[in-house]
Image 1 (cartoon, rainbow, N blue to C red):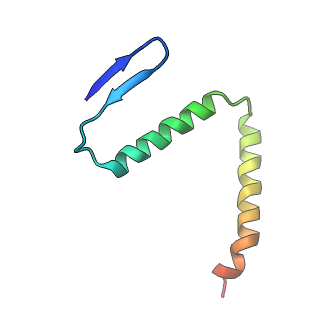
Image 2: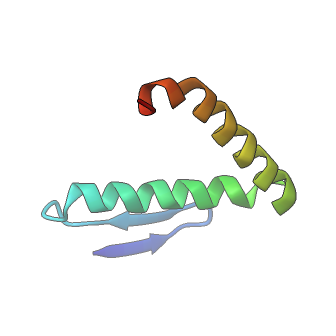
Image 3: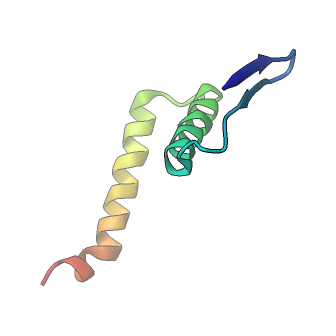
Length: 67
């Protein structure tokens, strides 16, 4: 593995034998961290949004999940 830093980016070279699924999880996590670093939302706002999303999801899907 080779890690190189330029003035504008970090370049990581990984051998082709590395498990793609695990690598994708790592990339998803890094994307998440990049997005979160730019957010100005408070933890309370994030919690409220998550609660609302979960409530909406449940309302749309409860008939599929309950007998």
